[in-house]
Figure 1 (tube, helix red, strand yellow):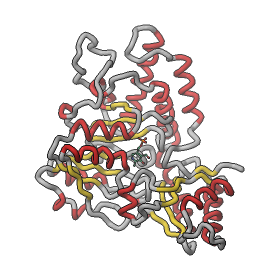
Figure 2 (figure 1 turned 30 degrees about the horizontal axis):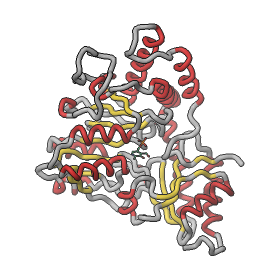
Figure 3 (figure 1 turned 120 degrees about the horizontal axis):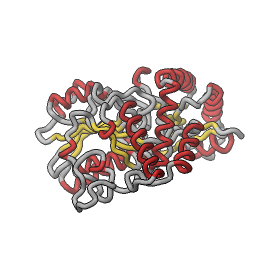
Length: 391
Ligand SMILES: Cc1ncc(COP(=O)(O)O)c(C=O)c1O
């Protein structure tokens, strides 16, 4: 049975072959440790690292490659910013569709009297920018906005939100885990201060890659590093360097993975992100239009097409989600994701907590045939007569 991969919101698969080739080449030709040695293999690794930094910076419209910090993933990036920037007594505003990569660190920080509240929004979770101002308190120090929801694919109006945040001198953290690589992002013109990305979703890198791009106005001096340690620089001192990129990058970086990330971004650039995204949008709209017409299927997506990313969720009335996802996998080869998708806040907001939803996410590798197989399978599930798995 061929695989119909619809779990691209968890991680994209397949990756372009160039990504695998770049990683093998790095292992073979640049197997030293970047910044830790003057021999040719260490220098080659350092050169690769610089090229990745430059590629990431250019991709997000940042003019200084040293304003890119590499981490293992978006979760580490978000932890770094929230724990390094917020102080006891601070207040944070979040969207209703945040992932636990944001909510769990915030919940942890609640022990230090750091509070959060949820911004008002439309029914799909898209923030209503006219209602932001009254939510801002004297002690509000940060906006955290999931750019594209990993549950219903809603894309937030980052630019408008940041304009309001900045008028109160409050920075904005954009969690671009789902949007990076599929929605155009320009850090400064979008008004993002802390741009968080993960490498393994729409940027087509491998798992274990991610980072932060610091906006040109972001005040990096105010942020304490999450970890201290060797950087290959100023090694005569016990103090952590206070300059970028070393301030936040202690320990050997995942150079092999990062070379794959560069190859993923190069692949997107070669194929033009706008072109890839518009083909993806056409497929997704066909998918959504057809399943919305199926009786007993409830779809969770953006209210307006223009605010829809590549992800959406559904439930089938009275049918157990776990059974449905297992049936899709075993009977049709369709790999979806079932449950809460690490986003209980979003599911509480959408009234799909605690059962969650079945999630589908397309990628530029998704074909029309894949989508047709899914539509037919969902129809079959919705028409199922046996009662064993009915709620
Ligand atoms: C919106 C969002 N934020 C954060 C994350 C965390 O990404 P990672 O697991 O790569 O740290 C994810 C991953 O699913 C996500 O979808």
